[in-house]
Amino acid sequence: MNTAIDPAMSNEVARFPRLVLFDLDGTLLDSAPDMLETVNRMRAARGQGPMPLSELRPHVSHGSRAMSAAAFPELGGEVSPEMIQEFLGIYEQELGNSSGLFDGVPELLEAIEADGARWGIITNKPEYLARQIIPQLGWETRCAILLGGDTLPHRKPHPLPLLHAAEALGASIDDCVYVGDDQRDINAASAAGMRSVVALWGYRGGEEQPGAWGGNALAATVDELLEQRFWQALR
Image (cartoon, rainbow, N blue to C red; front, side, top):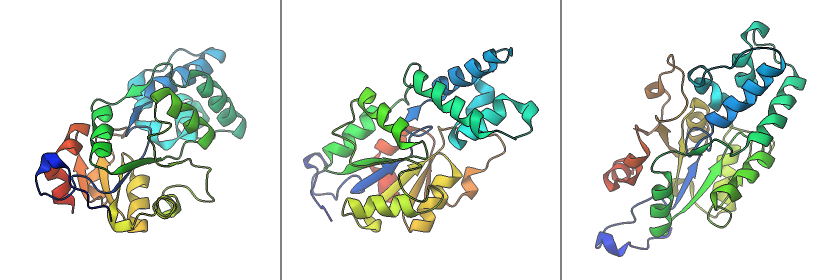
């Protein structure tokens, strides 16, 4: 374990876990505006009016199928593979056009790096799409690992991506924390034996109860993750 001390902390232990893994959409990146443009182009092609962001936002973390189902409720949840491919094709065109980082994310990642720790991304987004986002954000040399939903044989809530990331980076599970805004994120961390943080600023339906997901901590804002006492309480 890297026990390098931040000089600004004067003889205290490292501020952050040695490896902080994040979900992408709804945790680091507010991609809902890009998703909205995608479904509204699909709706326009079918002669339907635009969908408001407030109606799509709770479905973003659940993926293309859930968003397509929300955009076309008349389908009763029966979304065809062709519609999913249509969604992904349009989304690739919209990628990064309207999205942006959540407030506090740049400062958080800089603080993790300044502490001598590393950070990475584990998302259920297809890897080819996730890899197009990283250069837009200037993260090519900063993100220690990026795993998409199709990188490995299993995706979240299966623990494999989290276990693979820790092993690939030579980090023990005890030195890792996973931060995500969806129950699948927390379930994956629990199954991997990894500590987890529920990102309450993300995409969540009103009926969901994140306090019951079993995360080790809940954070209302990104700024909370900049507080040393937050991580001390998590140890």
